[in-house]
Length: 595
View 1: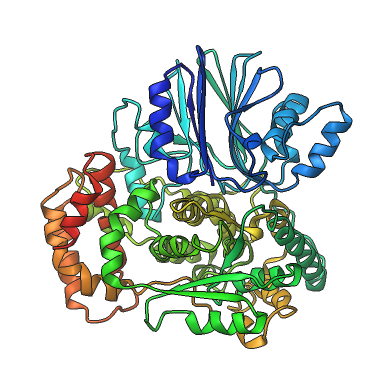
View 2: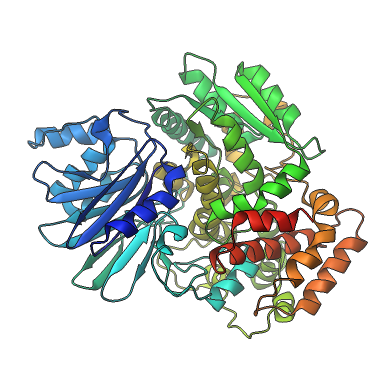
């Protein structure tokens, strides 16, 4: 994908520094625009209209509207036709130029007609206003910092901290990280740096920042039959995949062999007149999905490629992976995604991914707990069971881990117990899905997918997260998503039209990693050196030492003994802190991990 950056003053040196540090997001072109009131920067990964006409920052004909844009607007050709009828003329075949004239015609309301993934910034010289916007689901990132006088923004935090700011850890966000594995809401781990939330836009003018929601989920459950929804979902998914084949560069898909990515590849195979290029990663471990991916590939006759990873290579590259991850994050599947993206870049520049299906149609085991387990038990007890299972560090663990006291701001609990919500679903399962679509999906899964693909100049697209499919999921009855522990029931019914029954109905495995074995073989003996030579002021290291000892005592992973996961979360924070707060070079941390 691309990167966007900017701020509301003129400084060519700073905007070039911001561009330079994000150059991997857009290796094909870069540019800046500045005047007394604005500095804009862009790195381009060329996907549509590879000519110089797609150069950014881009302006309208009279130079009053300037844009930097990251993403794709899949329906830009239809919008362009409507704008041409209104008298607008175009100099390129890009979606970027269409956004400019849609904004000139409709103002912020232009967002309601875009179908795509995007983060954008528009400087309106006429009004002296900066307009920022992010797509409905949060597929593309956008961070900002505002001090009441000026505003600075970028696709990633590492670009914002090129500006001379106080890099202070937000303690409530630190607590959230160890609670949820990510940081929900609009906060980040660094105080005063915020995320623009999905489905929101912001206008900055005269030192004042106004943020407004332009889209949200509305849970209006329909009484239509399961076959009705299967038919509608099939049409929408087929249309979504077809839109996401729009590309002037080579295109493929990541294939795990599970129902989500396999369904996407099956539909791609129906549409494309050449074999789909598919890519799978594994470790030579029992958790690998090589055999399932190969089975799907054989059935669909794809051009299939496999990547086998070694634990030592993972360990050496971990600092680079965390640097690319940017936001504080603990999704271990970032590791295989990083290496698979690097591998796939040799063949393609665009990949379709299966992200989003679990959250829309109830695929994770936590949903089974929340929706089915202990059915006669009151909802408040079911809620406690879910929350307990969800968090890698329970409240009692965090009380032992942290030296500071914290307010237990339980965002998940608010979603599950809110009595009079304007848009919340009544059904308990749908409330779990609602929380994850609004929080886990943009801040965990999509963050991982964005950072690990862009690290290697690849654009990742997510057909399941076309907003029309997301809206459809809020109308489907819970019993069609998770009946009797049968997750993604309605998606499985649809997938039977495209895939063999044994692939569709096999037990869910997920995009997994042999974390326990990897840590045992490559990191366990180094933990005390890594953690205790670089102590952070937030933690009780006696408790961390106990975790290390408990992990050493386990010969194999056991249910509810999450020491590997807990240590990985601590390790990620430790490495992230050394690079982002203490400015330690990646090479220095790599040497430390090679102990």
